[in-house]
Structure formats: C-alpha cells, structure tokens
Length: 195
Image (cartoon, rainbow, N blue to C red; front, side, top):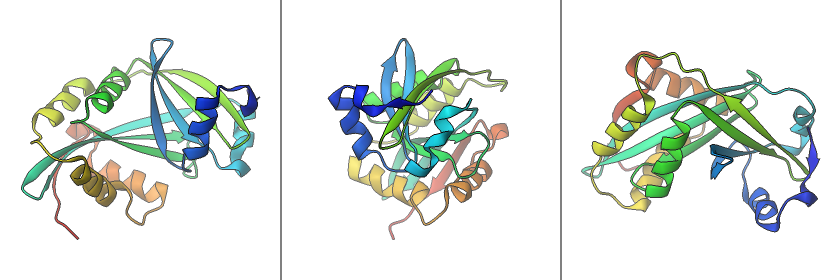
C-alpha cells in the first residue's frame, strides 16, 4: 500500500533522491531478508495501490577485459510482467559487500523490495520457488573464483558495456536471457575490449 515518503528516515529519503529510474540498488538485509530498492517513475506510482508480481532473473558473467577477468552478477526485476517496469543492478563480485548482498539474494528463498517514487513508497516481501537443478550461490561463487584481481574502474567499464549500452530495459532483458539462459546456469564467459 502506498505510503508518503515523509514518514521515512532522512537517510532513506536521501537514497530515494539518488535512485535512477530503471535501476535497482541493494539495501542489505532487513528482517533477515535481502532488500532491493527500485525507483519508480512518478507517473507510475499508481502501481503501489495494487498487488505486484515480480519476476527475478540473475545473470552471471566472467568478462575478459584488459588481460583480466571481471566477475559480474546482474540482477533484474520485472514488475507485473510489464516490459516498462524492468529494473537492473550489476554486482561487482570482487567487492565483498556486493558479493555478500548477491549471495544473500541468491539463496533463492525470499527477498524484499522497496519501491519508491519521489513522493510515495511501499515495502513488499516475496517468497522464491526456484526449480532449477543447480545452486545459484554455487554459480555466484564460481564466477567470483574464476576472476582475477581488477580495479573498480575496470568493473565500471565492463558493466557499462554490458548493461548500460543504448538499450531499452526490455532489450537488455532479452539480451541477457540469450547470453545466460537457465539451461546454462545463467552463466556466460565473454570477451570484452576497450572502446
């Protein structure tokens, strides 16, 4: 149910101001479950007045770049099966905090969403029922283990090439679906080069 942002603590109100549309941002764990913040467009905040279904899809990548291997997990959330409501975040798996956030999410048990427009918000909790024949946490760990040491700036370049290219959220969803299908444990090894 829609709630006014003025009831939120100042740090959460500050987070909302810095969230960008279509981006997801991990908030760590709250109530023993990982929480992800999603920034709604103001014109879409009516979505908060109705039940919201979510499709969650991770993608794991080792990307060869500048003679290094970068480890990335991309998490995507699609609300109500609507291609206009797809939100994305790329975890740097060599960043310990981001790795731990991703590991918690990929327990594939439950997670929470914090949905916010500039004026209103809601907190929602979801149970996951994963039917795959692999453990996503193992794929996450393997992706990190396959990586070399690299700088945060190199991760930023590779993640920008991978997910911030000039694509609509739907085009990115489809691209990642092809690169990391469920039958490949949502994993891909890619070669990147400086542009």
